[in-house]
Image 1 (tube, rainbow, N blue to C red):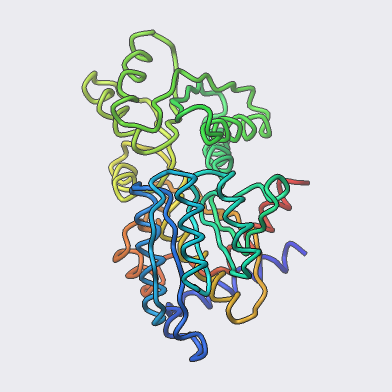
Image 2 (cartoon, helix red, strand yellow):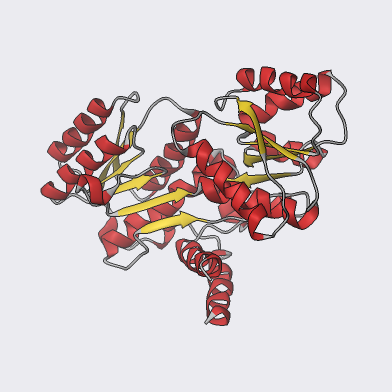
Length: 348
């Protein structure tokens, strides 16, 4: 079975390398659609995601309405209601809150409007709202990939982490993932958290300074996003710290340059551009009446110096140039098959 899945992935990759856009492949009966995009708030990640989503939709000739919830659950619900009243054919949401997401999904369900979620999604059992489709990265997997890299390359290392904001579940998922990977490989390594930088460059700086001042021995620091990594790199450079390995998550253009320069060893990618494209493909399949994996977790390979040229750009123009050139995988069928393969392997 595993060989069949691998063969399927290979065939899908060859198909994706044809580098067509979905507008070029679209059937005439998909023209004239109207969709709504509800953004959680003014975040760079979210804006890059919907830049790609909107461009794909407009390339299809669709009417696009973009609304921003300003991180307000109440406004998110109101935005979804406005789009339902407007009579859009489908809605895509980056949610500001899992509970408001559930209410929004329930409203769309009752109105018969398909609703897709990107990044986060509601708990369907708790809220009663059912999503038509969801695409997101696993923060647990981001941690797991970095832990797996440590286990394979430095199984005796002393590892510390600089964490994101506690309480959202995201930093906790990173921490669980990296530790589970190290445990799965029987390394005996226990990751020690040295503090939270709350996802921010400026707040990661004092955490890194305190780490160095403490005299704690460490070989590797896992910094949970590249914004904080920028602060860590600044501190290490200012204090002349060398021979320490930095691992991180995001795969932004700046992070890719760090890997090329040897400043960072690896990053777990979570490009918003790809997330948008895969969700858009779900929507296209829905309109065509074609099946798709309703809840898709996107698995990508850890980016290191060996595969850095295959990194998926975050920025819209660079992303579409890469699609056209066949520089990376972006086809929904490929990622559906990859999710099944990886999760089957880990569940053995």
